[in-house]
Every structure is written in C-alpha cells, then in structure tokens.
Image (tube, rainbow, N blue to C red; front, side, top):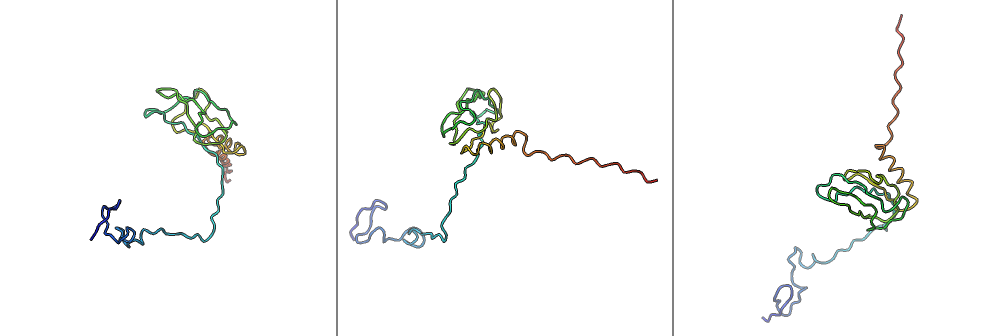
Length: 163
C-alpha cells in the first residue's frame, strides 16, 4: 500500500482522506462536528452605567498604607482608561496611579497629604455625569460607616407604685 505524508500524523494510507479517518475522540468524526445552539427568544442587552470605587493599590509587596501626594485630576473632570489620576507615596517611592475605567472623577475620598490603607477606597468614578450625585451619596455612606444608625428607642417611663 502506498503512503503519503501528512502534517498531523506523519503517514496516511493513499486513497483515504484525513477527514475520513476515525478520531481519537469517542464517536469518530461526528464528535468533532460543531454543534449549533438555537436560541428560543432573542437576547436583550441592557447597558447599565455604574459608579466604581478606586482603591489604594499595593505598590510593593511590603506596602500596607500609602500617602496621597497629589491628585492630577479634580472632582468632576473626565478621565480615560490608562490616564494617571493620582500620585501615591509608598514605603519605597512616589508613583503615578492610572485608572482602569473611563468616566468622571466624581468624588475624592482621600485628600492630598492624607494616608489610606491598601484596599481602602480613595475615590469614586462615575461612568456618566448623571451618576456623579449617586457617587457622592455612596462616598458619604462609606465615610459614615455605612447606613445611618437608627435612633435609639425611648427610655421606658417609670411605673407608679401600687398603693
């Protein structure tokens, strides 16, 4: 029987195509056929903008907190992905920190010269100008420790003693 060279297996018997050979997968060549999924209803996609927290990054393996040297952008300014927004002083050096999101710098939670622990929110980014107020509300709730505490229940009134 004559043999011809094949890129995948070396030699293939003449007269047989590579596609007609049995596959190593169970079910032969049928297992390699692409399956088609049919969707019963069309998919609806709703774009939803959101407010994102930007956290103090760990700029070195030993960094536990960082100092905000200066903000390169101000509240309400548009920012783009990859753009330097803040300069952070770590235990080793001062570094520019870039944003990973497009949008507006809505709220600066940690001012120039203040310290923040690694992982703490330092600012909030809104995707649209309309969400800046929502970002301010999120920042206010976070700075007050979450939701406002409910008022204390009134003290019980003393009961008069029976005669």
